[in-house]
View: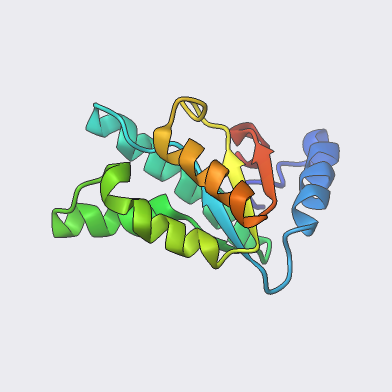
Length: 139
């Protein structure tokens, strides 16, 4: 039983989530964005784990996902690199430029995140469709 299939009581929710994610299948790369930077390292770590969990759920469904947080957090931690938007901006936008769609995880702080808001603006300028999802949808 997967994290998305917890018996008959949530069968309708499961079907609705599956239908929503069907639009992302195929060879298109999806950019999965969420807030990350915070004054407290524990918050950054919690955000990393949440977005990585969501990325895994989407991958399990056959969706090709690039998650800048999931992909760069371990590199930054291991290599002693900064974790802020100023450092990662050009890298993240280069990756977003290669994606056909952006999915925003509306996790706590998403409206205040300078990096996330810049990514959303950039996607709009590039004509990349942006979809918004709450975190509970993929818990």
